[in-house]
View 1 (cartoon, rainbow, N blue to C red):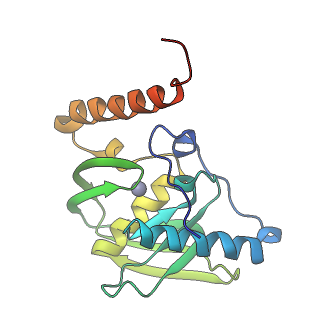
View 2: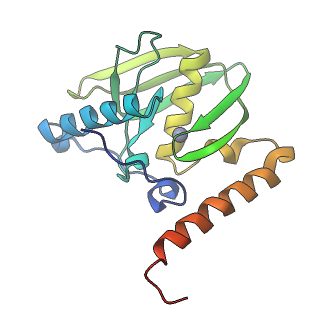
Length: 177
Ligand SMILES: [Zn+2]
């Protein structure tokens, strides 16, 4: 099932998401992850974090395969190691029409749980390392545009203001002018 991705300033995007408890693993969590995978493919993203669909729990899904046929979910992901540097263009399904170059570590080691509550630990480089950091940032209430250079900050502020104004207008349509 494809879920809506309410864009910034959706309040869930700025919250710190909570960990999934052991007793929450099961069919309901599996369904959520499956729906998030459908939503990610539909939106043509390489990753999606639960806050992007309005849920403040620490769940991410991703697929960085060129064939787009290897979906994965990770629950309670944590970045254990980060080193090296890469700078590459990023965008976000939650911040439409904004892109910019972000500097991040080039290699990370990530640990978490599978959707079946098995321990997972993996090393990621390049695009995969970027994706994990971008998605874990979402779980901490952070957006990629918070990490853009000082030179780009005014553009970012203007863009976010525009999204806030658009959201505000939508909400006030029934109000008298
Ligand atoms: Zn994003």
